[in-house]
Length: 214
Image (cartoon, rainbow, N blue to C red; front, side):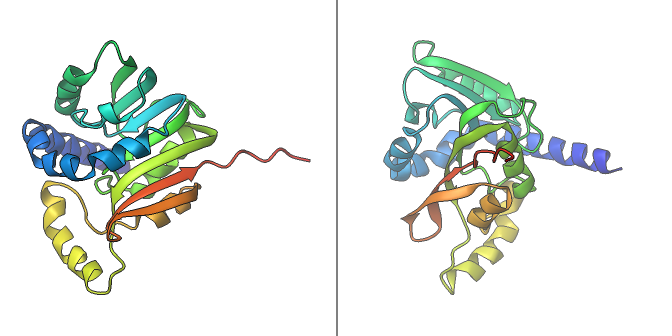
């Protein structure tokens, strides 16, 4: 029964983002204009084998270092079709894979860097998704996130709670406590930067290296 419920939810998410794919770029154009340079600086820190989660239509691809080895995953085939057109064959090795962040098909300890961009506002079980990223990241690896989160401003947080009842129908939740979720998944946050008030944030976190037995 649980597996059937999970499959139904995954299909619902796929269908939702498939439907959003044709208008996704227009809906996010203001985000790219406003925060593009912040994302470029942040994601330039990515190195080694890179996993970009929820690549969408590939709007974030130009923000990563040239000659990178990057795997982009998304639950939506329609998003990936558009992203494929943005892949520059001369700018490094880029691979696109259809996958659910809550159940990635990669081996343990595969990636040096994992990046997300407004991703964990939409993952149904964010802690489960972050634990999966923790699993596929190498010990000592780096997590780079650009995310919008629930504000701690006394009047803003409750307003975002109310708005989320509407926004989650078509897209993201606006009231996720992403910093706390990152910690619950086993990461150690090394930097947390407010980009807009305390609602849009940059997170840098690491997967602690395994402690060898004495």
